[in-house]
Amino acid sequence: MKKTVLTFALALCLGSLSYAQIQTPQASPAASVGQSVGLAKVSVTYSRPALKGRKMFGDQIPYGKVWRTGANMATKLTLSEEVLISGQKVPAGSYAIFTIPNASEWTVILSKNANTFGSFEYKPSDDLLRFTVKPVKLKTPSEYFTVEFTDFTPTRTNLVMRWENVEVSFPIEHNPDEKIMAQIKEELAKPDVKPGTYFAAADYYYETNRDLKQAMAWANKVVDNDKKYWTYYLRGKIAAKMGDCQTAKADATTGLELAKQAGDDAYIKNHQKLLAQCK
Image (cartoon, rainbow, N blue to C red; front, top):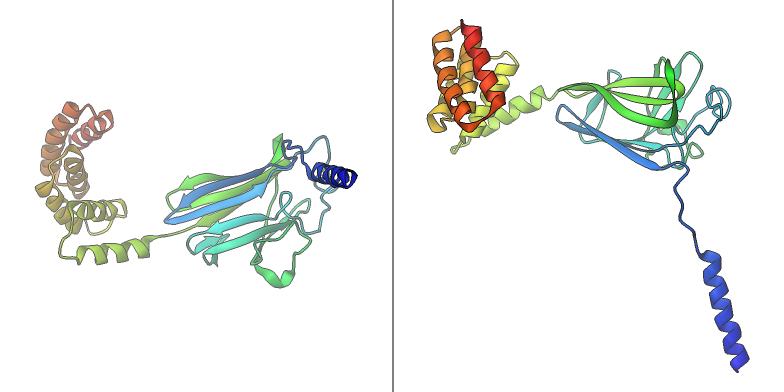
């Protein structure tokens, strides 16, 4: 009986040892990067393989064949809103990014099957979008495959992928104007409009060069309810753009004094610029 128990215990130990794992750093560690574009949130999750002295494009990664664009699971692009990618509409959702590298041109593929391991499960029938990009030769090689966002504006960015001595990129755009205008209309129709709502509406009209008289009317409501150096600056800059330097100078003078009392260097400079502009 004892022999049987010992044999069973030994078997358990050996079984557990056979499944034990030693944790070491991943050869292609997981990474993620995100960026707000307009009102959309754009994120990429991917794995980062290393060169390790190997030649990649045209060798380890053959030209003319679908590549997973990274390692392990296919690189995943997630969009919170419909955006334009390379000028084409792409609905909100998650997509796998596959590529077909070539020496002078790459094909970028967005696949509706976002959860695939490598390119083994890739099917052309899952394609949502295909477009081509021109590769750029890097002066300094990139040891690890890298994805990042560059060239930001409030409504546009470039998604850049680089590895070895090659970089490719494509634009992602989200113009939220229609949605923002709808929000302004909806919020201003409410019976209990807050000063912050008037502030945001006036500032958006100022930034987008819309009806400045309407923006000034909203800015007046803001200042009437909340006399702060930033509210004076809002009304002052709208007045200056309208050519009403009398109002702009008065608001800048008042706002400058309040900003100095608060020790807000940024707004001190803002009001000083308004005063200089109206001279």
